Image (cartoon, rainbow, N blue to C red):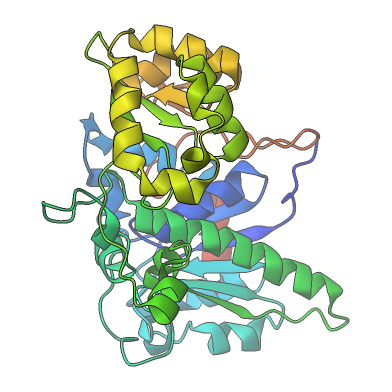
Length: 386
């Protein structure tokens, strides 16, 4: 069965997280992803976090379904090979600092001369234009300047980070959607012209800030950190149960709150005008949270979840990775897939998202060894150049 991106060739010049995250998704859905790595050390992520026999376990997830070749982009031979490969590529994805590829003669305008249909997807800290264009940009800084970290944590403590490279991953997702839009535009163009896609890490994070900007502009409100609650939306919080475990309950729509009130034995709340809509509940959120936790403390987490599942109230435990592995929903949806490492040992890796009914993505192989596909991809082209 063909995959949606079968026949699309992607040249990945990215490093670290953002661009390679996008390249992973392209590869899962059928694109031929050729990852260009530095001949000496390869992608820096090969050496990040938990290692297994010299290679990061994260790497095997991050680079799956990709072909690894090694080129020194700082030297003429490597630059010439990129130009050669670009002749046959549909997409080039990169996350160098703006101007770097131009300095090497392999920027968008350079490759467009070789292949007018090429799409270059460019991820950087601040974008390809503007006064911050030339600054070094990392996901952690983007999360800070994009407004996310200001809102993360408790009001009486310093801002904290989400425990993942969330800024890079958000930018990677925008890179995928932007590239697909550009491919669609090329398909509709009689001349089949490409374009470049400009994804800024900071803007990617900023785009998630809901109504924070208009709230500030029109009302002068600066949204602050609120810990586990959602300010202005109630009830939605984390509550302690009798067994010392926590459960998240999100009963913040009018109809759900009515079901929730009945489920926890407070039918009097249903007809209480103070709780009939979100604005009223938000005004009494501290009182409601205390009532709710008084109730959850009388039951185990499992009991609370059972009661609320039967009542149709969104609720769930806070999972560690151990909990996820044991959960039947993740198992049933193929989100815990077993692959074999080069030494034959098996390991669980996350499954493919999203699920397509007719042309699903798949994990065809794990992250390759450095330069594993040099002969296949550039062997013949090198001989032609000499």
